[in-house]
Length: 166
Image 1 (cartoon, rainbow, N blue to C red):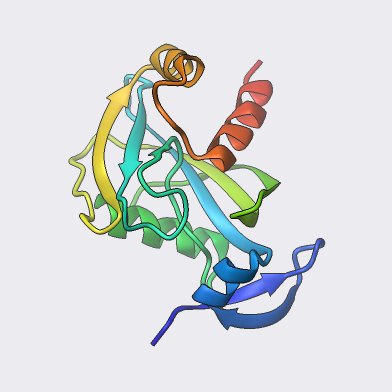
Image 2 (image 1 turned 180 degrees about the vertical axis):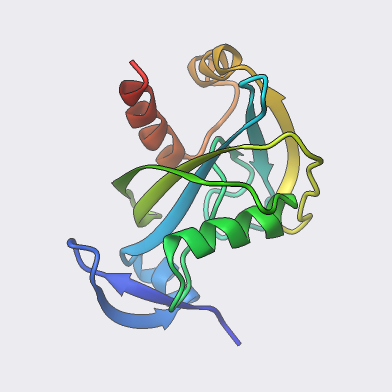
């Protein structure tokens, strides 16, 4: 059975429930989680999405997470997605901020968290093609170089993250 997604209004209130495919096809506003994963050396985990993803296939991710399903809280979704996609479990999540993003492919109210994790990564092969830990300086270089294509919603939320850290 197809995953069901809560469609929300501009205030974040659920207005209807639809299958995930309809949410994507009609680019309906929904809730999503975005988790920055750091290690104790303050390196950030970046991943490359598989080509089979329904949104931004093959692009690099700075944040990890997913679409919030019906009845799920942001926190529940964040923990579930970290465990499923990366094998990360039982780490404290620190809430950072909410942001909205909309383009022709994605319309999301995102909740951004961060965590620190030093254990092994177990990639979910259907979701994650590869991963690496890099410094924030290297991340900034890669974003500027244009050689690496990053998920555009991640770049918008990262800009807000950097403005908070000044």
